Length: 392
Image 1 (spheres, rainbow, N blue to C red):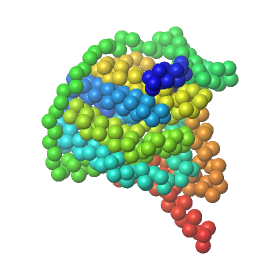
Image 2: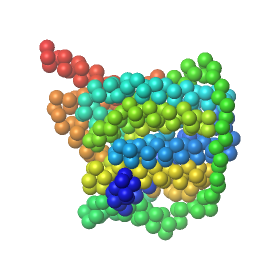
Image 3: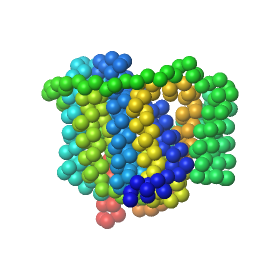
Image 4: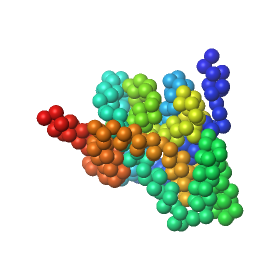
């Protein structure tokens, strides 16, 4: 009965939202994954295999979790984790890098099985979670309009299409933005089809090597970054959008997927935040209970991307960067506004939410951990201190 019901919930807007989410995911961070793989000593063929592994892993987990829980649950590689690997793996062998991936996945799996992460997230006030999400997404909104400097006609036309779409057909506004961007970029000759090629890359397993230096020096930081900078915002995104699936099984599934796929180059599969927000907004579907199909569609596009993992870099190189940036920012405008409203609505938590938002939006990175985690810490400390002061 589940499959026919899911097909009834499928819509054009969900399909578009899923496609845009995958487009943004690859366009915004595929280059960092390339750098991480190169730092580990992977060959060009192995890098293509890594991207295929990640695409297939994200596709299976996104599609499966979304359909099982009827919730828009999207997974992604850890972009902060990839950045960490790109700067940390130079002193280690490729086999040691695989060992690091497996070790980090095992730690995430343990967190999911024990339920420790879920109990921690249950103590985070809703306003602070919404503020962290708004801070994570703010950069994308700013970059969309900053792109007007370099591509005024292209981005301006996309902004006009967004406003017109919001007025006339809100469900398909993002589709109008995408179509307008492609049309303008094509007319201007900015789509470099010569740079795109179709190649298949077969993932090849690599035997892991476990050394104390690599596990402590890279494995533990990768685990912390993946949990604090990826899974925590991913849970906050779900909560801020009004969804409450069981957190521990989600964390366990992502940890298990990482552990299984690590020998093939799957360095990290986590809950998505930024791209997941695209699948949770009203543009995906007016009814929140039917938006899970947007994430399921994204899972399908991830599977396609995994099959052609060797072509991902060249395909996205063919599109102008301003087009990708504008799509990401405009698709997230509604979610940014809703998150800010939820963050600042309660006067009792407003100061803490504001601190969370500002720290997260600042992009500060301390001890190898991203701004989302420190924004969360700052907000909780502020709320604790102000709460104690008010009680006194």
